[in-house]
Structure formats: structure tokens, C-alpha cells
Image (cartoon, rainbow, N blue to C red; front, side, top):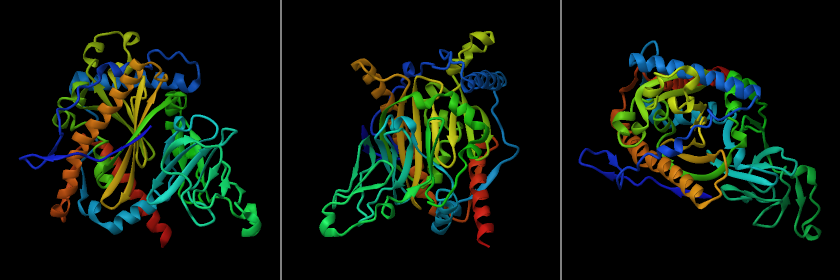
Length: 431
């Protein structure tokens, strides 16, 4: 089910957006742990559980000392780096048009003859799983006259038929039929397949490169993070829903995903009800990272022996794949995935994907899944994005100044440092 929505923001006397209604109560029962129930002997699952136990110990040390992970120093980022349209083009060329993009969860294409269509930087991308289960990606445009084959969303389709003149393709993108070919003239099949894009599937995530000539090494791209992602067994989850939000400049938007410093002030009646603020562990794997905030039950678990602690109740890790996929709740029964993609220099789009460990079959299960998705959607829209739209509004007036990222915001520092590195690499390659 695909829903679209735009931020509904009112202006307050203080000039900051506020929700149109009272903030939703945190769906505390929806945070049931999965990791404590997992008994898989798969090496990736064993690695994940061992890593989870170690991560809990690290976060507990912060809880005991009332500290958080800190970078060595502060970082300043010129405001002009958010404003410059030319820089935005160079960033998207060096990043989004160059690296493997995580554009779908495997469970969005749950079986043979399924697809996900998504627009990325104005490029219509079509991801398919063919009848043998293999993943493909291609430009979502007919080779006859360029018409879009499928509108954005997920679904089942045994044959891709152009709505304009009924040319048809199989799920691998091969041209299979030309309507009225006798009068049109013979069309060589091998020369009119859909334009393919490099694609691959790892750990329940589908990656696509926008450069048809790219040869991405996904194992190298994910590195040592891949076993931890695989241990969450995301490919076994069930896709429940996808909703969509418009959002500001992609970096303004993503800055809000990469720190826990704002939980108490921005989310006092929602996220802060379940998460402690400004208390987390932080790890990086190449361009990727994980922030792991402390959850409130850690106050009780700190007194328990290690074997009695439930990692899923103590820590809420968010695995973040560069350049814009956040996986929250990977140790739980319900998982919230955020995919942030730039659209223009001043606007991005966010897909919120809800995954379930078990399919919602009964009315009660569907209502619980709906509450979880609605809570996630409303908090991001009415609290996070209401504030970041205010940030966007003030950027031009702050031109010539810079932002400062604190030592307690290592995720932001790593994100911006990685962007700078990709720009530097692209600049050297162009010389």
C-alpha cells in the first residue's frame, strides 16, 4: 500500500512549525524485542547477537557515567554548502550518480514477477524480480518512444507493457513483443531491451547504480557491516506499507537522522518517552555508520546479569547506509526504514517503509501495524521535518556563516566528511 503525504505545518508565535494536533503517544508495545527470541545458528545471526551484547555493555557504560560517544573535536560546515545549487549538482554527481544506492528492501519484491518503481534525481528507475527470483534494474522507459512503463510503487507484473503503444518486455527487460510489427517494421529484439542499470542484493537490501557502465563491488562497499546487516535477516521480513514525505534539502534532512542530541527538546512527548537523549554509542564502516541510543529500560537492565539483559529493550540501534538509508528497529518485531533521496537543490523525498517480522493477518495485528506506521510518519512529519523546514527557510539569511557540529554529534561529522571525500575524489578524477 502506498500513501503520499506532504508536511502539514502551522506557524507558531516563535516561528517554528508545530503539529496540527497533539503529538501521538509512543507505541510502546510495538517495541517488542526480536533479537532476544532469535535462536538461529546462522553465522551472521550469531555474529549479530555477540555484537549486540557488546553494544549493550558500551551503552550501559555511558548510562552509568552519564556520557555519550564523542568525536575528538567539533566540526564546522559552511552554510553555503547547503545553499549552492552548483555544489548540489556536484554532490549528487559524486555521490548519488556514482555509488550503489540502496533503493529497495528485498521484501518490497517478495517473490517472482514483482517490482518497485521509484524516481531518483529525475531518473525513472524500475527494479524487478524475475520468475527465477533474480533482481534486475533498468530505466523505467520504453525503448520505442520513452513512455514510463509503470508508475512509482510496488506490485506484481508478469510482463511489462508500455501504456503508449503496447510494446512489451519481460522482467529482465528483454523486448518480447511489438504491437502490429507487420506494419511497424521488424524490430531486432537484442537491440531494443530496456536500458539496464547495475543492481545487486545483499542482506535484504537492493542496491542500484544510476551509471549503466558502473561495476560496483557490493561486498567491498558494505565491508564488515554486511554480517551485522545479514544477522537482522531483513530479507525474511514482510513489507507492510510505504508512505512518502517531501522534505527539505537532502543534507538538512539527513542531519536530523544522525544524532540523539535533539531527542529531549524536539521529541519530549514522543521519542524521548522511549529513548534517552544525548546518550549513544557510535560506529562507522567506511561511509556507513550506526548510532545506538540508550532506551529507557536500560535503567532496570543495568542491575541485571548480562545473560538476563534483552538487547532489544536496552539499545535502539539505527544502521545508516550512505548516502541515505536508515534502518531503525532491526532488533525488534516491527522495523521502520527511511530512504531519503534528493530531488532538487532545495527539496528531497523520504520513503518510510514498514517491515514486520510476521505478516499482519488479524484485524488486531493490522491495527497495531497501522499505529506503528502512523506514529512514525507523524513524528517525522510534525516534529522533525517541521523543524528542518524552518532550518531550510533560514539558510539564505545565514549565508556567509557556518554550522557547528558538537563532539556529541559524531554521526553528522562522519556524514559530511564522507561527502567532502567523494567530492575530492571526483575533482581529482576530473583533472
